[in-house]
Image 1 (tube, rainbow, N blue to C red):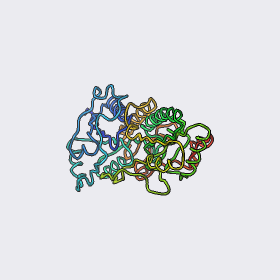
Image 2: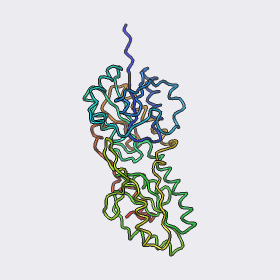
Image 3: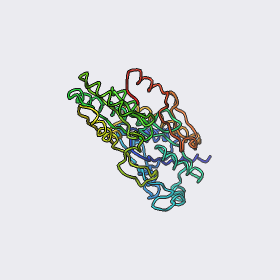
Image 4: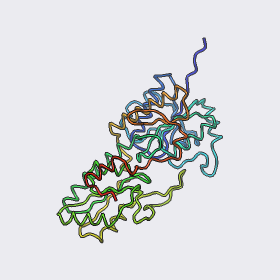
Length: 355
């Protein structure tokens, strides 16, 4: 009898790096190899690797010991749209490369941009399964993205450290987190770190209200800890930006709202106001235990979808259950903090200033 053909699966990580990517790579590789003996090819530096033909085989020894390692062993790229990279559409050349390699399916690990690009290859003949990744936790269709818990842990620790300085000097200390359109990191990190005020893009806030809280704390001999997401608008203005990025999303590179808030708040209070920008510290380092487990669950479920031939879907967490959703439903969507979310009610319940 003829032997069944061993499936050949490609794997890439796209967009920004975050803790947990290697855990997914490990889980997909191990689950597919042990489940159906699949051959795994890693695409280096995301979709850029498909354009430049940079690939390498992934074996069980290649993924040994990477569960707790930050970043991605495959590398990533957040600027390459293969459909218009350097003014050209490379999709036909990529599909020829895919056929040359004999690739049967692609597992794409990334955020909204990665899911959007991956979905376009399905109609071209490359079946796709998506795995959701973003520390912002704002990807539509899933309750949780791996990497988010690790970023929240960094924010909470930073607030713990800033709080001791704030109390020692009677200062207002402002911590700026990532969060372009969604304030999940600032909200959960602020709650975990005991912030007195949490400012997120979804909720308008009053600068005089923040100043009044700071003055009241000053009169009481205390201090003020503020956690602010980078996408917050002060006085209805556009978010603070550090420049434009020429990439697949063509979005402004945000950053600096904490410093803007510091300068505007300082004339309204008597105490000293300082700001700290965490930046990419939130993306780096080893994943938390929660993210290691979630990434492993996601990787195994992605492998199960591939083995079952269920393509055009993205792995998702809904409640406490790992499932999948149509990739088409994810693309272009977002997941902001709802105005009636339980975390907002909890924050208000303990007196945190949100607006």
